[in-house]
Length: 234
Image (cartoon, rainbow, N blue to C red; front, side):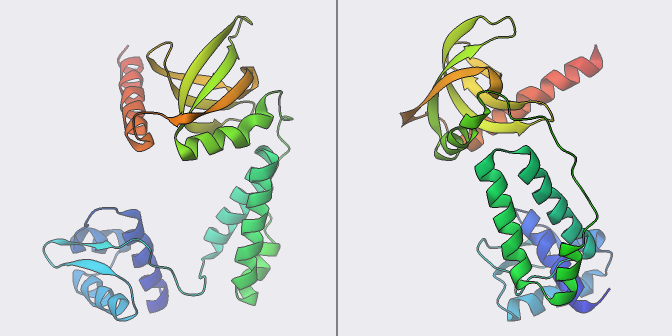
């Protein structure tokens, strides 16, 4: 591995860690010596990377540091292309358009040899199910999630019975044949999953929900972990 590639890999690893990570852990993950890690961190600092920490304590990359002109491996390019093509085919129109625009922006700054890999990727995405009724509301749902706004929805269950709900949307899951809103339901006083194609109508409320989305996500993930363990122990 070239030194430039190793430095890039070190940056990527640091970016994944939100808290200080030890030099020994970095060395083990990258397959290099601890001395090399310390030397590479000093090199990155000299090039402008805001890395806090020291030997024996750990290192963390401050948010906001941007990589120099984009460098990707062949597999990273294939992952970007495949992901963008999946979103373009399977998501709603605004999100699909955003995926294509993002890929075009990446292509505009790649060197020619890497751009050839972007244009010539042979990883294809098969056609998905057509967007069902109600899924045209996905852009509004995503906006509510970003702004942490409550939604008032009319929702039909599997038997067609309709109920009015006030929910706190925290995530949107894209399955092959369905789009599912993960939310706290005020009616049930618990987390519930709502299929987008069963939402008959919705209104985005001006009021934000009372808990931060990140806290709700942690609570939901903890709850799902307990449910999974219960199924495995049954």
